[in-house]
Amino acid sequence: MELITYRDDAFQQLAAQVINNHEGSLEPFYLPINTAYYQEYYNDNRSNISFCVSKGNKAYLLVFICEAKEKRFDYFNFPIKFLWCKNIDEPTRKGATSLAIKHLNQLLNGNKLDYQESVSYGLSSFATHLLKIGYKPNLLFQQIINLTLPETVLFSNLRKVYRANVRWGEKNIVFKVINSNSIYPGIMKDFKALHIFISGKETRSSLTWQLQEEMIEKGEAFAVLGFLNKELISASLFPFSKSECYYGVGAYRRDLFSKPISHSSIWNAITYAKQIGCKTFSMGEAYFDQPNTDNSKRITDKELSIAHFKQGFGGVITPVLRFESV
Image (cartoon, rainbow, N blue to C red; front, side, top):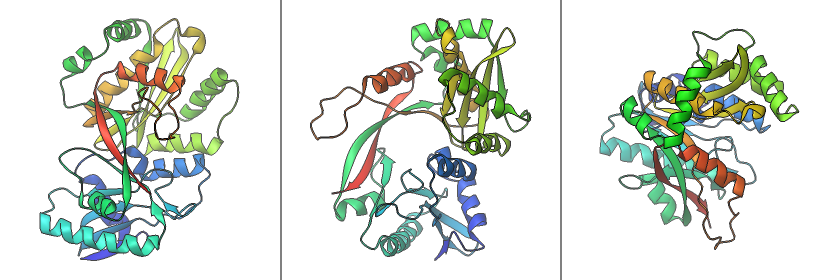
């Protein structure tokens, strides 16, 4: 086995192997244009130092990581990620994990890292390694919709009032899904104009909007636009990978909040993500009002309200362990 770094000529081809044939779920944040977007959004100029473990022309493991910030390694403000190619036998997995850990230990050189993984059938070898060297797992929750279920079941899992709202939206609003085949010049200018109209100001750089348009062009995202009387009243962007779609950002006319304009928009995204083969639809982190016993930041009423809104779309609450150095 050998380790191929981001700067090696063979890296991009090997990384694409894993991304196109990975096991588990790949959040779209780790795809190239999404990464560029978050670098610009967070004004993050760190270098990508991701690497692959491979043998010959066969990639086994891809690890997403960038240079450290404040003595902590992550992937442009997201946790570092181990992404495995499908159908890797256990001896190969152990060998690849051992090589990756050895390389990470050299990179870290006493610094810390940010890592998380879903709780499923057991911890990965890397998560177990972190426990052994003193990392503490903190419990988070994510809301995940299983897109392998029939559409009729997905609809029945919506909150009762949401089902009525979706029906209203389908009857009164014209929705258009914009993908790499239907994108038109200036789509994000329309999105941006609606966003500024709603917020009353420009909240991020023009380059972030350009990168989001490129996400659609390169097949890393799609948009759902809603029109009422031929006027754009809603616009939402949904980054996606081959396995997961994510509810990214939405702009909805607040003066029309008496009408359920957001519910049908998200429902259109859920059904479209299912059509293009995504296995899951992530509504993001799920928040609950719990006692603040460990001096952690208390969940705000706004966060609880958003979580309640999102949970009306169904799915399951999935536990996630986020590992932190103590």
